[in-house]
Image 1 (tube, helix red, strand yellow):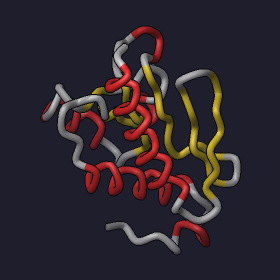
Image 2: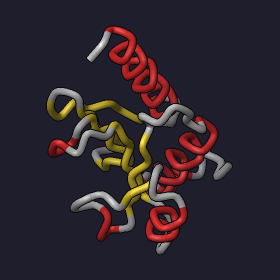
Image 3: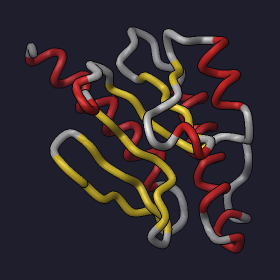
Image 4: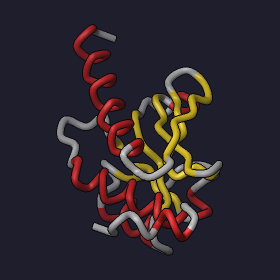
Length: 129
């Protein structure tokens, strides 16, 4: 990997981190090299995965509304996928290694996932937009 590619990955992870840690009581937990989980009171609301199980992707995985993960994966398979293990529980993967990343879309997905998994009192502090 070139220095430019490594810098770009680091910048994108930094943006994901910034979005997640702006949420009430959010915490970052590194699980293994190149992977991180973001949690609220012990519940994971987002996973950042770099080449998970050798898939070659840099992606975030987050909870979405029931049935939405299938719609997203079918509608834009170059960007969305149903992640192993979590897909069966209504999670979707969004690639953030594409040339253009819609950070408003990332923010909306992160916020939805947070609200779906955070305690009600904390979720109420975060708007759905």
